[in-house]
Length: 407
Ligand SMILES: *Cc1c(COP(=O)(O)O)cnc(C)c1O
Image (cartoon, rainbow, N blue to C red; front, side):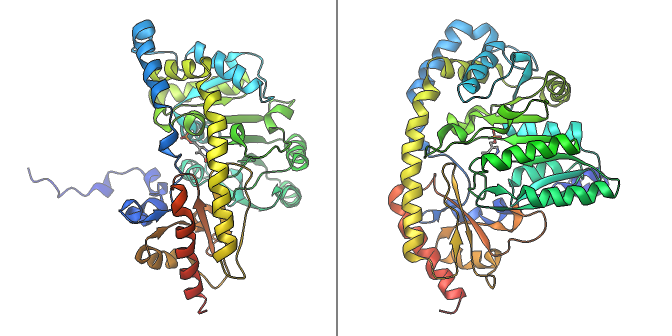
């Protein structure tokens, strides 16, 4: 039998047509080459991973809990871990009644996939921010919802515009199912939603009867003392599905996240999860539980705040110093990204060719916009790159932009 002659497309499900490789990954294959300063990607700084703590914990888990850690576990997650997550969230004011309102997931990414699976039918209306988290778009798109993009300003999602849209949609006899938001230190925009907007969003959810997905990987290590409340903490009707993850507060390599929502929603999510992977790795779950219990996560958070705040400041200073007139950017209070709006004549996807030559990588913003806009935007990650390369990277970018502008 000759291999390689199979017409694979004949076999593929229609669903696969809606699976798109992240444009980012394709475009940025060169970003890891030596000499390239990369503001692409969205990775934590590996120099600050808690290597020794995790080594000790792993040893302990194998010695003391190996029989359970090496075994299958409950789909909902290891109780011990859920107890620790419950305590961890409650210190941030996010209270759930009991561990039945928590589902441990294989990263927040799996929670997004599960939510799409249980809530989205083709054509369902799903609201996202403009721009929004690319991996959420990817997870949702497979289930063919119709996206409604809502613009943001410095205070986050324009809930007034959402309200107008809602009125119109409901007057046409249609309804919105879900609003997906990253309200705190948004990826990619680096914007934090004001408390008033959060309240307004909840009021709208109640009035127009929809659910909210609050994706919150960053609020545990804000760089500044800002007063904000998680949407979940204000939710009295069980409309908010809160997601967070160990990827940014500990290590992404554990591939663990969690969802907190009403017992009814968590039960449905668990049912879907069972078919996907039976359970998240018990081994990782015992490690994460121990990391919370021993205060390893609490020890990490001030380190992340300090290191990332410094890097953010270096990037903001460099942007100020080198970027030409007509560019504007966000000033994030946490998270990992600064979002830049360039003059409209610039197409950042096309400009990437020149960036490749000059050995500096960024993510063109276009793929974060469900409405096809954002061609003149770029996302800059400030967490991965080492401190003394930030200024040089921004200087290289600025020279490319100036070239594009013909200056
Ligand atoms: C980093 C990030 C996540 C984390 O995803 P994991 O699958 O848990 O690694 C989720 N949502 C947003 C918006 C992020 O930026």
